[in-house]
Each structure stands twice: as C-alpha cells, then as structure tokens.
Amino acid sequence: MTPAEPGQARRGIPADDGDELHFCSTCAFSAACLDRGYDKSRLMDLHVLVEHSPPIREGEHIFRESDDFNAIAAVRAGTVKTYVTDLEGREQVLGFFLPGEVIGLNAISTAKYPCNAVALETVLLCRFSFPKIATLATRMPGLQQHLFRLLSEDIGKANFLAGDFTAEERMAAFLVVLSRRYAARGLSATRFRLTMARTDIANYLRLAAETVSRILKRFQRDGLVRVDRREIELLDRPALERAARNVLRN
Image (cartoon, rainbow, N blue to C red; front, side, top):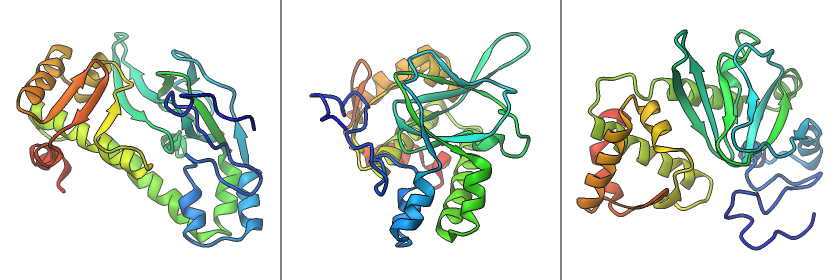
C-alpha cells in the first residue's frame, strides 16, 4: 500500500487498509474477532470473504429499492444515506451510515433491499457475501453475536424518532447520537463534520429545513454548539444530552 497523501485520512480515506492478517482501521467486524482472541486462521477465514469496492462517487447509488440482496456492506470511508420514495415521488430519509457501520441488514428477511442507498461523498465499502458470512458465523460465536448486535442496532435506528418529540429534542438527540457514533470509532466526540445537507437532516428528523437552521442558531446562541458551515463543535455535551433525554432514554 502506498503512503497516505497529506490530509487523506481527514477526507475520509482510511489510512490503514489492512492486509491478509490485519483488519482495516475502520473494520466493522474487528472488535468481534479481536475481543474473542481468534487466531490468525480465523481472521483469514473472515478476510477472504471481503470484497473491497472501487470508490463510489458522491450521488452514486450503492443499491436501489427492490434490488436482489446478496451481500451486506461495511462502510470503510465516507457517509451513506438510505432513503425511500413514496408514490408521489417524495423522498424520506431513513438514516446515515458512517465508517465502521454496516448497510443492507434490513434486506435479510425479504432477500431484496427495501430502500435506496446513495453516497453523500466519496465512499469505500467492504462487501461481505451474506450466505458465506452467515455460515462462518456458526463457527465463530463472537462473529455471530456481533451480527445479532448489528441487527438490533439497525432496528433501534428505525425507532429513533417514533415518539412525539419537540424539534429541539430531535435535533439534540441527533447531535448526541452522532457524537457517540464518532467516539465509538476512535474519532472526536465533540468536533466533527456534518457530511449530510441540512435538508437531509431535516427530512430525517421530520422537520422543516428552516427549523433545523433555527435550532442550530439557538443552540449556538445558548453556548451549546459552535457551527461553521458543516463543521460543528459540541461545547456543552451534557446540556445536549439533557435536552435529548426523552428521545434517547439514557
């Protein structure tokens, strides 16, 4: 592998792509294997299932609704948006996926993707044949448990905004959850880039775009955040967590 160019990791391209016996720095399955202490042969069993995709450019689709399902994909770099379109052609954003997260899990039961997935910036993926990784999981309890946890998290995302919450509660919860997801991947929990447009955030939160902008300005005025275009810094995360407590329940 050639050395990373200056600023490469900052743009989302992973600095470490791994090799035959080591995981990528953003691998969605590394914790499941390393925590169980699997030996190199087990790591090789998983590694040979990986298909690294070529770069997917901003605006390109990874899969579309009703496409046949045969693989799940772990995001190595970039951000992916999932959405559906209703009969009137209106888009409904379902979620955003960051490096180290897995897309396609909601297609397992029907064997067809129930939504669309599009790159919000240049995206790199690791594709795993689901039949093959499911077979391997029966021999690796740690991997099987991790797959169950990923499925549970995916279901939890669907329930994220099911309640009757205020706009402020929704926006605070969105920022806190993003913070936690970045922190879980060893990235800053207080300073990050909103790779999704305000209109996409508003759509996801079931709010007007003007409402999202107004709440961010209010949060900034109250000293909770600092916003510079798409760059955001959480200045008072405990206050945001208190504002989001009804949504997050923790």
